Image (tube, rainbow, N blue to C red; front, side, top):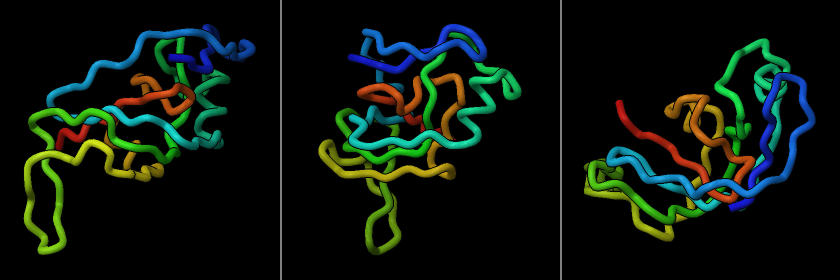
Length: 119
């Protein structure tokens, strides 16, 4: 997949080919449909909030679940938890949702990203 990657703090981001992310047992892989860049992305890029390099930024995005791990539970209308998110389900994750994942995971500046739902 293609991703916007920076290899050093303050370095110009480059559109490059990277490996598709693997789906963790307790997470989902999401095909990113739209993403934004916010101030916390800038702080990571400048090195104020260090991240592992090279880095794919982004944590405010919307997309479609393409793979769900076997340990993922979903909330349904009656408030109960059921196994798995549905592949093809549309999901929007802002800062709260992305905060569930470590900042070092591939961000939404790629075609796909991973969100760990571990509690």
